[in-house]
Length: 297
Ligand SMILES: CC(=O)N[C@H]1[C@@H](O[C@@H]2[C@H](O)[C@H](O)[C@@H](O)[C@H](O)[C@H]2O)O[C@H](CO)[C@@H](O)[C@@H]1O
Ligand SMILES: [Zn+2]
Image (cartoon, rainbow, N blue to C red; front, side):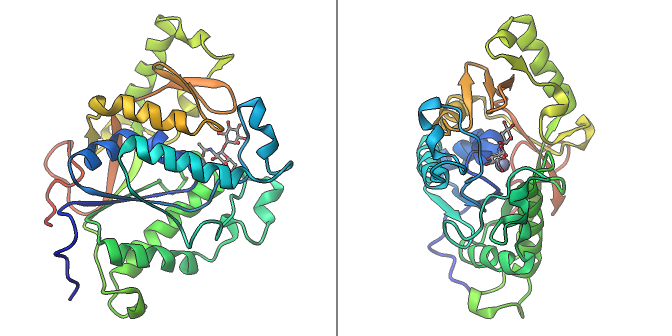
């Protein structure tokens, strides 16, 4: 039986594809739970080597130039975690084990070392080892489409969901630790009414002029009908930390007040509250305001 005495009471594990996804999707949630004393663990599946680069002075980092963006983004991620108060962040299988696959359909999808071509069970075993060590009650990842169809996001979903299954199997890889059942699994999402209100607010205030273009609600990853949302984390107190963490990913994200843009220069609202769909486990009555609702230590 695993000795849990050294583990903090509440333990949250997040599984993401690239450095920056964690701050965009869950920055306020991570800051909130870290501040409340929960143990927050982030596993990022690639280094984001194939990303575009916003600052002109860093353009040389790009994959088709010096190909050092991955190493640079490790530093960005560390800076972002410092802003959120998160101290446990890891790369799946170690830094560089799986390479960023590029956008769906890109030639990079064919590289043998890219995450999109990973064997899901082999990749999941790396995550089983983390799950059996940290023993989280709650795991957060993407929906089956990865939020917006990026191959690394889709693969992160598949690997996370497979690892949850395997970690709970006592007969699976006993060398990776005692079996552990994750009590609750959530997928990131955003209610349609919140996204539409966010864009309307920015247009009303004329802040949609801060960037060359403005995205549309359909560009936002994981938009769902309001009634599909099962948890809403009021993280307004942590909005500054989230914005600072997003700014730390300077090669990928430009933040201006309540607005941000990725390298496509399409501005969108920076949402402080963060939303989830429970897909494994038992939800508390009504829309939850705590991801740990109903779980024991
Ligand atoms: C938020 C996210 O998942 N970013 C990924 C994504 O980056 C996008 C990509 O470069 C696209 O071509 C741009 O138009 C868009 O603005 C970017 O956000 O894909 C990258 C390559 O796989 C990845 O490194 C980045 O983290
Ligand atoms: Zn991503």
